[in-house]
Image 1 (cartoon, rainbow over the protein chains, first blue to last red):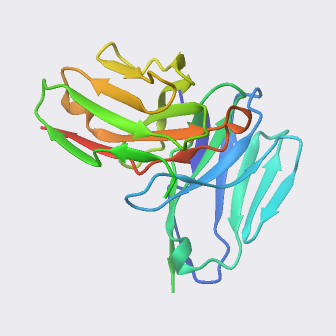
Image 2: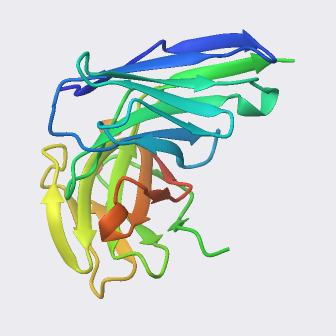
Length: 111
Length: 114
């Protein structure tokens, strides 16, 4: 049962563009929504996380927008760079449980 | 480097053989997680430990899989009688109990079953 649905599967943008990755969840018991970045041959690494009582969070060029009523959240990458080319996973977390990951978005930022 | 380490990085085995993977978490982290990742998919939860206690196992974890964390430090994941469907990347992660949405992942062990 996929509890976190992620789209798109892949995304190509030009340098400086703003890629947007979307996720939707079903379980209202989730209490944290992190995003992870994964480069080839590496494990995922935490980028940014948000609680469901916050509508937006920014850290550097990365912004999470959260819509609790719609049960959706998204990642925006401002001024994207070729070094941002990676696979991005949204996830959802319930205290005391493991992370539930989306299926991933492969981002390519062209120079 | 005091991050999460995994050994081996790659393992090729024949169907029916047993394999064991090791994970060394960040030393002060009391939670340790195992995930499995197949190509083009997100990591799927297998099991996790708090200190030496195994607190949760996924339905994905068949009886051919067993994990231990004997002294609350490193962990091992054993797969018995491997099948081709077991081919995947096996990821280990660790965290502090209070901030377990923030997990630190190792580089993974890529298993290929021929």
